[in-house]
Length: 143
Image (cartoon, rainbow, N blue to C red; front, side):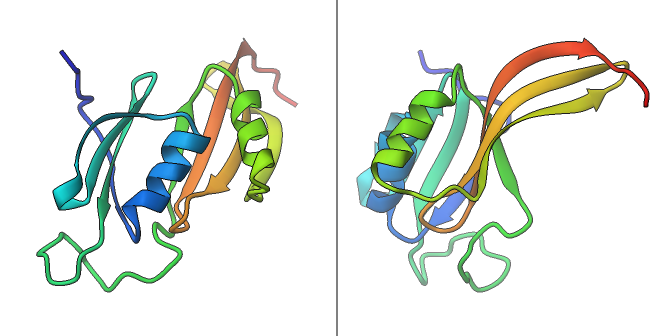
């Protein structure tokens, strides 16, 4: 049986097909299930889950304001992956530019620093997606 996470973002997208090509073909998500008649897909990648719903004017979707690209201003979705290299290779093959280049970053979390290899890419509607490969933890050294 498929287990749904307690928190799953749902993104309104312009064209479900283009979004599935990005999320599934390029980032490696699986389609857990979909309702093509509703323009809806539920995706999963190693437990990271997201829902995509195609924008349909007049369909009663939960929108707080008119949609203008880029969608999702002020948010980035961080997704843990086993390795960023295979995703970077797929994105490079289609020449999709990165929003932020790959980097190793260390963030203080209490008395340790958590490391992650990360990059940011935009989906077809402009949502920022940060893919993260965990590098482990190290003691925090105050400067």
